[in-house]
Image 1 (spheres, helix red, strand yellow):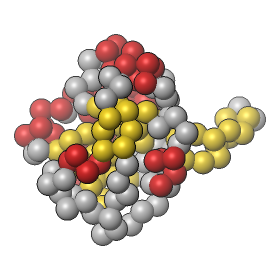
Image 2: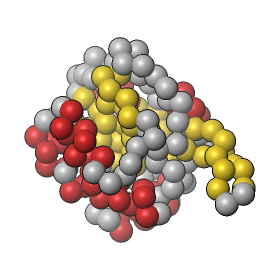
Image 3: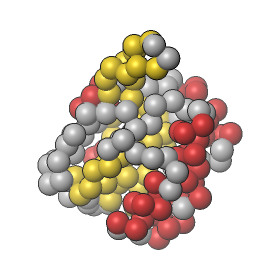
Image 4: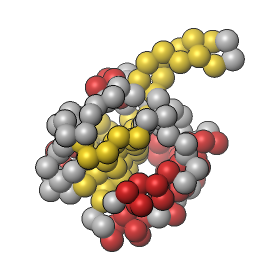
Length: 150
């Protein structure tokens, strides 16, 4: 995991609309960068809807929220539309960005081994440094946890 005080690696990925998004686009603003395994699965939906439900509180604090998974853009578009998500979801299909954030690697499920995204979150400060790290996140109440820490 990246450590508090480290510079967050910049990146550019496509959002659910196919538009390019770079971390550097948010210079001067806090960013919640959350990594999640798969769009429209129970835990990921709980986590995303938590951020949606607390959206006004994040906006009031001028905090951007970016969700990153290895889903293709079309799946992210469907997910965002189905749950009326007001923030950007980013497609990292090859896991390159998630790897740079120590949030991608070998996983085991039902006896199968595969590469995938780990549920981790970084709070990145206006100067681009990591302010907080949340590893192995519980999706239930995660948005509220971050707001409490802010």
